[in-house]
Image 1 (cartoon, one colour):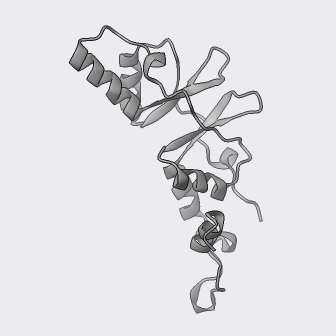
Image 2 (tube, one colour):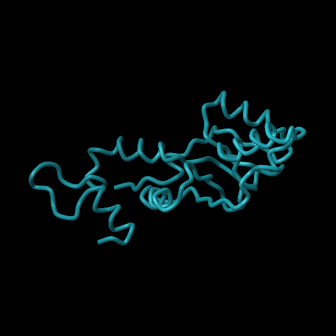
Image 3 (cartoon, helix red, strand yellow):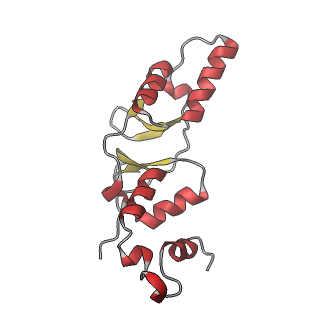
Length: 161
């Protein structure tokens, strides 16, 4: 049975920004796309950071409070960013999200280039669509084996069983 990976569920079309982009333009693009953040890449597509809703809020508050001149994405982006590879398995990605507060992870190739992003919602959607997968949910009904299913798998992944 195939185990789902980041490459299977990632969004390959999400926005990316370059550090030199005007922060106001980046915020507008995020809002129009209804995204809570986007990867920031260099000219070769390598991951430099993430621009999150929190980063955008910081920029807007600074501009409102200080009357600061226009700023760029690089002034506010989060530089310390975790990423995953396309072969990272679904439950490992879920474990990342359970241990940290961020809402999405950039997926990068071996050269560090962004090839997609995975969000918490992508994980939920993948697990929900695998309801009939006995690997994910175990046997159905009263015959369900002890220790099978998503809850038990997540408990094992977190080292709680």
